[in-house]
Image (cartoon, rainbow, N blue to C red; front, side, top):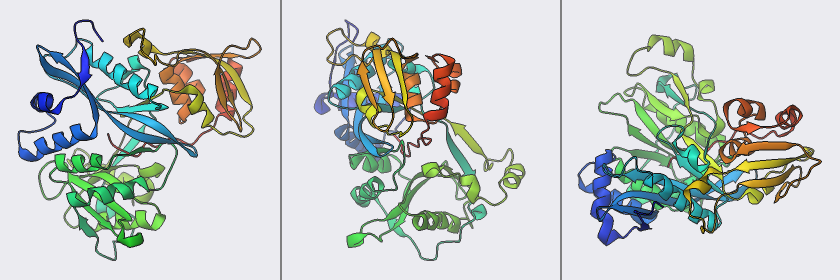
Length: 416
């Protein structure tokens, strides 16, 4: 942290009004009771650190606990839930160093990976974060869905069901790269922030538990949408198709909804005549299209643990890894965790390992943490990363990684 600005834990009695002011200045909330209540719940849920300017909290970083699924394992995850600064706290480096401090604290406490949502690409590269694979968001007319309308009416759910909704979301179908936020209050404060959100679902679980649901909010005003699908949570094919059937039943009034491809499924496969819909709605507020963006970034915090999660029988890959970790430049020299930079020997096979050292008989891969995280998590070939990111190595090693390091494309499947 810069010598003239010290960080400390958020103090509700001392900092609550300052946090509300900061969020108002950013434009995230309005001056009304539900938003104040939501911010209070957010600050109760997250671990937050603040920096003061002129004797008042002006910069803050909030963290949430969670897990990231990597193949068959759930790795402990440090989620950067929010980085925010008031109007006089910007462009001074405080947000960067405070974020580094918070990630380092969680890494020292056992987080193997860290993740965050981004306002734009590039800023968090300086802390070792690398872009997640592209996520596709489709705008669809409900009438175009190639599924039957729901044959039974869903149940309307509300804020009082937040804990049960979270339990359902935690037990949804698992897939590689999936992020789970462990505190149920995250759904509660998100629902409270957005007063227009509505949740429809079913209770088919044991003891009448919520089995699958969809959370939707209007994007703007008007009865015809478009709507945004915030969460679609399900475990079986039948549950997923039933939730799409609920959306289709809204098609007599709603002309469009937007949703990310859920759990690796291409929504284009489930839309009749997608190109026709695109052509006839071009330049309309309800334009039917698919937008691909990467709005998340991840970084490895514990290299041995992350490598051990990779089981690739027959891969037979071994190499030196010379790893640069820029987060060290933003941490004090006495920090208990200062990143994972250095020389490593990495082996991928049925039992994968990473240990400090250098073997002169092995080829050497050079990378920064962000680029190597992108390779490790999957969805990016080494050849492509050697062009677009900071990853270099002998052609034979790059080719071997392309052919033998084959993982499913990760899908974060969560919002934060």
